[in-house]
Image (cartoon, rainbow, N blue to C red; front, side, top):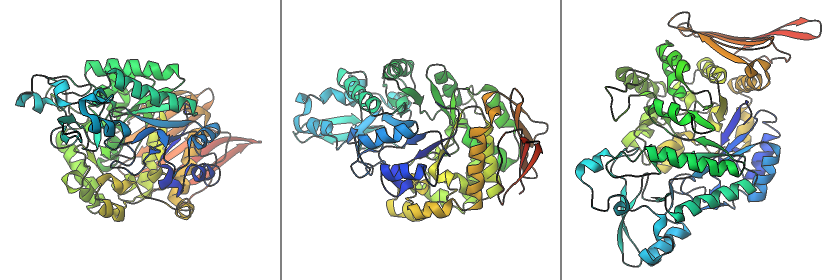
Length: 510
């Protein structure tokens, strides 16, 4: 993976069309802005119960977007990452339909995880309460099959997403067929979606077990043998990110988004600085994704809150959630928790721009902190365009995360990239991509509780972010061989020595 900024996008929701239209946009309006693209599920169908994360056919491109030749063509222009939805498959899939038709005689009967396959002797109340849940209720769905059989199936997320038994030959073959299809179509990196829930054992949390780590090790080796790098997606207690980072190519730094919000809204850098000291270096950094803003990632371990505290005290974590709600006039409250379906217990559904009250300066500072944090930065398409909450889509679908999943037309994108805040963000992206200092060593300092200095140095090259969170003023100074464009939120002051650029200053005022 290149150490430059990547894009995260739904093909149709950013481009207003399919894969051809997205590639056109990446070579026109967004030409040479990104070094790679994570295509959120483009499998058939893209508009299922969970926006593509419930594939009917994980080896087929939704025809409305194009086909595998379009994926291959895009991958020739820039690296492509795709999702492998490890934990589940749609109840509309051919495999499940065959299972429903033939029951225990189906060749796919062992593909799915049933309650009795984990609890052959039945489950006690204590055992059921031990199961870690990202959603309310138990992870089971009563299924009345078409052949008359009755089964209780494991459904971690929704009744439409049937959990796969990844330890049975049928589950292994299913997942390997996905790897083969992606690898031969030019995809160079995969994101393991919901892999933390893949292994179930009676009497445990059924989440991130020792056996799960073993499964990830094995699956990552299979991916690497096909030329695929592996990124693991796990929302959990921060120490688990540190542990899993030792076993795979890349992990998400999901603690960073809420910690940056905490620093900017509380105007203190202590928790963020503590994370800098312990976080894994092989991280993909994000501020926003297709999911909500993860709160669990900086909270205490739900299994032992006293002995495994979070990065932020519980009272401050609760207050942070309320500040997000206040900053967007309560819109996120309407999209979060029991207020919306497809809900997440440990995430706040809101665009990152609105979480900061639509404050351009604070938003750009948040992005600057992300880009200066070690790792490979990714920018979600809604964040790229500093988009507001899509309340119309939320109220139409009643799906909480749709507040942060707007459908753009190409004309909307063209208008959005003319906004000063977006122009400034693109300039920051270019600085992060082109500055030689980011090939070197990182250091940071916190001179006071409310000031942060982040520094990159490589040979004679240097880039420094200095921020005063109390006043809201911040500045980037960088020795560089490239020019910086002026924007309303910042100014580029360039000193020349002959034909060489020796310094760039990018200053933003609140």
